[in-house]
Amino acid sequence: MEWIEANPLPAVCQKCEEDFKKYQEATEAEKLLMEEQGFFFDCGSCDHGGERFYLSRKDELTLKRKGLVKAIERLERQIKEIDNELETL
Image (cartoon, rainbow, N blue to C red):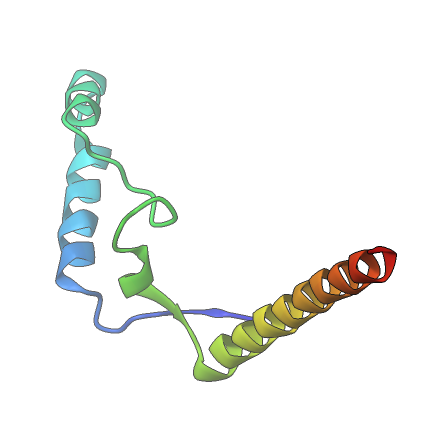
């Protein structure tokens, strides 16, 4: 599974890149002020991370399939528990 970076970057990511460059060039005091104002530069925590990085269609389908198989297994366990309880009644 591999994350693909959007090209071109979404506008919000381009703005963030510009802000990060300003942050890197800032003094320690300016950095603290920027952080207090809510500047952060972590794509993994950003609300727009899914716009910048995405999975290939194949990887999306693979993950979806895996989730559905797990759901089926969970439902089969629940059915078995119900059947066991019904047998005891």
